Length: 315
Image (cartoon, rainbow, N blue to C red; front, top):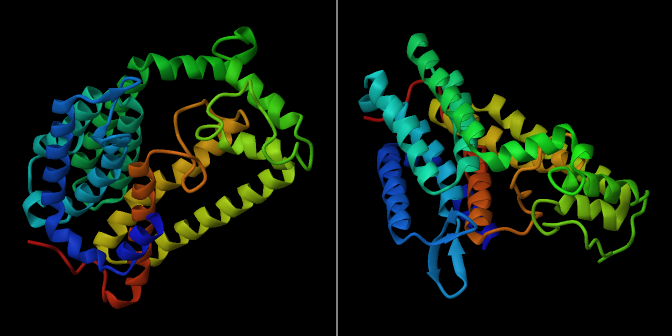
């Protein structure tokens, strides 16, 4: 299903999305309010429930939807001359309120990360850009400080040995699993009973435990080459809308790869992030990653048929 979605998006002209940027934003907000009204939560997080055992993590998908819509709205004439206060409300405060109401502080921080990178790139009044970035950074910091779960994980990462059975447990177990794996690992389906979330957050740790340091090195090289290729696409695209999409999506998409890998080996604090295409996750999130990759490929596919940069702007 994911490959089908990726191919469908890849062979679609991404520029057709630009006139519907505001519609996409309004649709995302509307669906957000709808799932909040139904209030289907699991472990404190809100999901879109479709019946049976099918639930979609729309909140995680909305990070990309908000960024795609904002990337287009910044280029339309209607929003280009809006006041800073209106942009702040629509681009920062409203999404922040929705993420907080859904109990998804991590998704809020990820969205603000992509938005701040987009704002640092976009061509707008320097004072307005600075104001939006500063407010976004304040909201990001406040969200991080208010999330006790994330703060506990950071404390455990800084000094894991002080609480080996509590905040530092997962860090110490992950290090021991990697250390004891050896060059060739413990074999396929090797048990690791004391380590949680082996199919999602700590998939990389389990792969090293099973197949050894050689598997970890190969995975790191493959992901490094993949991210380098994505970064090269950023340099190759000149059309403003495509550039906005790439600049806002690629850093966030790359973070989903880099952070879980580094946290698995103790170099970053543990957060609830699954490696795209490798870890087990919600079907909605998986399809969103495939769709985003397809959008990046669509921008790259049409890079040579655009013409001069900064000449296209929607009404």
